[in-house]
Image 1 (cartoon, rainbow, N blue to C red):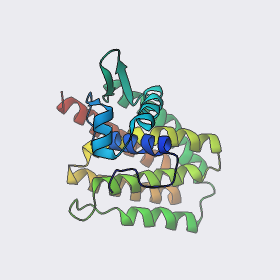
Image 2 (tube, rainbow, N blue to C red):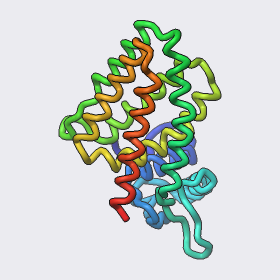
Image 3 (tube, rainbow, N blue to C red):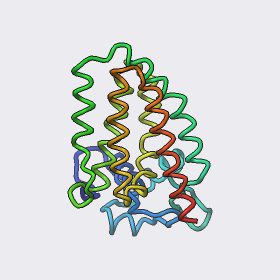
Image 4 (cartoon, helix red, strand yellow):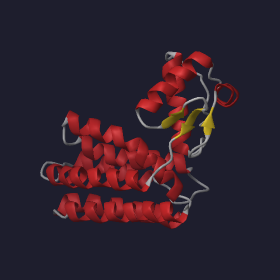
Amino acid sequence: MELFLSNPKPLKVQAYTVLKEAIIRGILKDNEMITERVALERFGISRTPFREAVQTLEAEGWVYNIPYKGAFISPITIKDIHDVFELRFMLEIGVVRKIQQTINRKNLDQLQAITAAMNTDPSQMSDVDFMLLDKDFHQVLFELTDNERLISVFKQTSDLIRRIGMRVLHRESRREEVVREHRRIIEGLQNGTAEQEMEQHLNKQKQSFIELYQGEK
């Protein structure tokens, strides 16, 4: 998917969306300086929408500002990984505990369809598309709780998870592991072991992210 302003949404919303997605995908790197010129040349973003977007991204922690120098892409830290997984352990294990009591065939078919679409061959499916399907899988679990506050928390953290996950998926074996873990979660929702399967999935994912982080140091 090309990252360039091209739709009828307000320009500041488009600029925010494009820059944030560029950060998530790794097009804009950790600690890279992002200037008005770069934004215009690479993404078609003009001065005013750029400034408004950067203000929002800074408030959300995606960029940081150094006085008299400019805006830079916030790096992923080991604390980010620990914090987001502490939250995920608290929420997602409880989510599957709740929904396995009421999940039906239609719900299971939806989860299975998403998992089946997750191609483990990088030449057949991009990391971007794979991670979007991974996000869809977990979002469906949250939506099945019918709890808008839980769903909102998931949406707030899912982009950071995608950002980290994009770096892990260069290992084809991790794609295969994710698909197997998703299938076990689906099976667990049917036989009452979903909590254990989710815990194992999150532990594996956290370990992969930490190994990635340490390997980049």
